Image 1 (cartoon, rainbow, N blue to C red):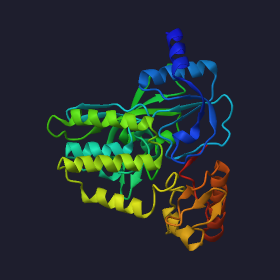
Image 2: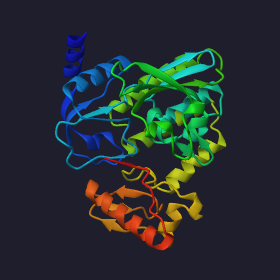
Image 3: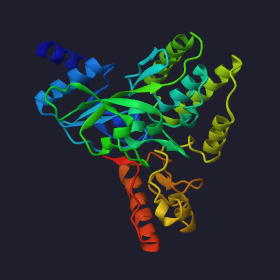
Length: 342
């Protein structure tokens, strides 16, 4: 078993991969080791072998909420789960792998005749990261939609698959138990009413197309938006009605230019006790449009720091510090980054 796992690891692990190609920020130097397992079995092999080698590991999904370093630490293994995109439909129960784009849930919901996932439309990132961060849009959040989560405890030498019910996940505003445990999310169970018998077939078609799109750079916001907006048009051509909430999401995100430049969306978590959103604070402080190197604070949304001209991680962090210092000075607290800064 050990030899076969070593052979698999050596076959799928790539060398000197530019992390910029695997994040919506378009920022990141070359990783010494990079791997994208296609399923749980491959993931377990990668974890087992890298553990035996004593390699430092960084696990992520589509890279939509991550700022990678300009010069990655030598010898570090970067593991992307964005190729783990299986969906199993069993009556009203769905098992969804962690690499499925959150936005894919909105399309699956339309096919199933369920409104549960409309809020995930055009939410960048994948399910695993969405559970980790308890992704939300207005009053809806992913933690309210799942039944249980499947995960691997990286501190467990057996690396066995374990489950936890949603009620025990400590979901709160952009919070979950997974932020405080060495647990790697591999999928989740949903309960959604199935419509007719064609859902599994339609999902299979969607997933096949999505995997092809992933290979062509679905981590890019431009590609991401182009792909999902085309899928919506295809569904409309089949006379599937697009709900008003999804239309409003598209209008809002396009008006705020969310997909024009590489970014990770909102950079800071809102502090609701302060009475204003971070974007409103940045606006009042006159910081919108401020630039550093190739980075700029979005003129359209004060809580977004954009990569407009081949920005480096250092450019992004300089603007992050400027915003943090100004908010601390004028509002009395230091905003917490939503973006995982690596």
